[in-house]
Image (cartoon, rainbow, N blue to C red; front, side, top):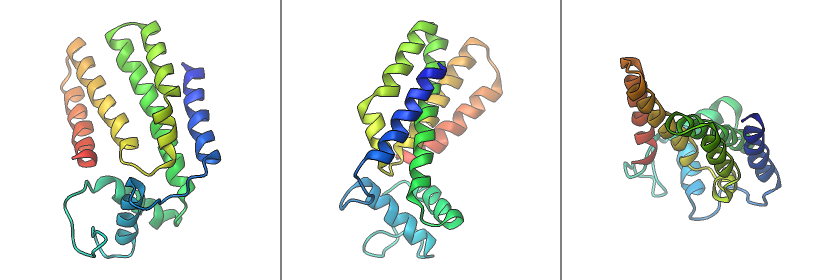
Length: 171
């Protein structure tokens, strides 16, 4: 598992360092998220391109990006590094989930496939809420599966927290 997580980390970090993409690109997800984050930092609130308040997009990821900008300045490499970490967490949670449902061999195969999945690796350079949504969703599913195997209310409550935060990212 260590080597698979290292491959996930190295491939995602390597892509963010090598990729010629410079966020934001016109009319892309990262443009929308970064514009919303900049508006939040500037004190304009959650407003779109027209300068009007909006409720058509999830607010959590732009809020998180704006907090990074407020604390560290507008350093995109920190956002990209956080997305690398979220990607590695996703691989780890997928491993744990698959192991709890099947066995270690299946879990290692699933984790490896996701660690090198081109879409998962290449999207790391783009500011997208999926990077945080996926580990939250996988953690929530894992907690529910573990609760079925050995019931405990705290697992269900934590799963609800994961799903709730995830819903604020994707709905």
